[in-house]
Length: 343
Image 1: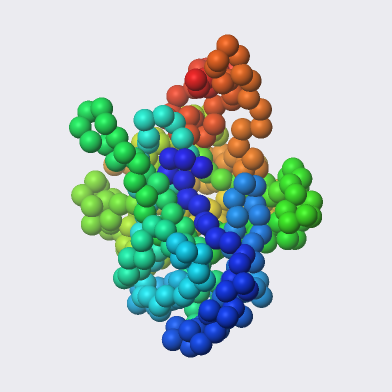
Image 2: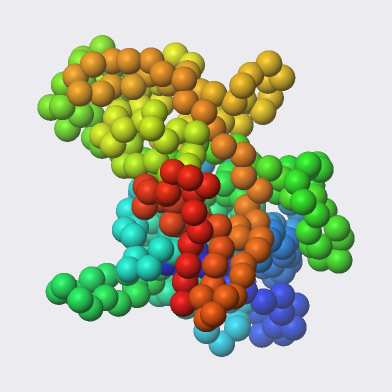
């Protein structure tokens, strides 16, 4: 996926490297079996997700100062493990829009390490027992120089494993979406409920200057004394159920009276709607807007992750329904939501 995409690369050839690896793994503290086990792939849509050999994902999330092992393949396809330390497990991604609408990662926290392994080394972050804690994958953003020139730039960060395990659990346990062939087995893809709003964090010290009162500052600090932040609305995807309800600059204080401090809180609140039979898919959100605290019911959307299912090539133009990157620009024609044309 272009734009702010992320990907995980690798090859299941660790067993072929067994002779070269024996005797080397003692340095890092990880056995060859652990390395081989970490390279069992489960396909999801067009992406490949890495899971540990025994299916063990580690929760709770990583903390600053934790020791991790980056297990992956080098440029020469040699299975390798490197020891490192987490410097920031809560870095919020900020990837701007590209010249042409294309996928970019939003509403995501990533993990930073104290060692720069370069952009060609990817894999998984594990603990000393080989339990997967994060995916180590690459992101792409577009850097602009002057008024007309731009250049794609890649960087590598850790993607917390909870973002992967939630979807995998639904696939393994059975889902109600469309069928996809995974490793020779037909499995239904999960339907995921999301709030189609782009958010960004603001420090509470800055939020106070915008008028947020001490009561809410203390409540948010008590909920999350590490991040000490509040989420603000950057924009809504056009055509979403949240469109026209949330406005740019709104501070999301709580959902169902529970304080909200990070993207995962939003995701958990959306997933909780699926656990309750008696709901209309709406979140009861407490918002701080222009000096006033208000409560509002905001609808959520259900997506299958299949992207664009149909395109038409007409007179050299590729015509399709507006995909999320187009809708993220915040505008769609009022009648029928129009089409997106690329050439």
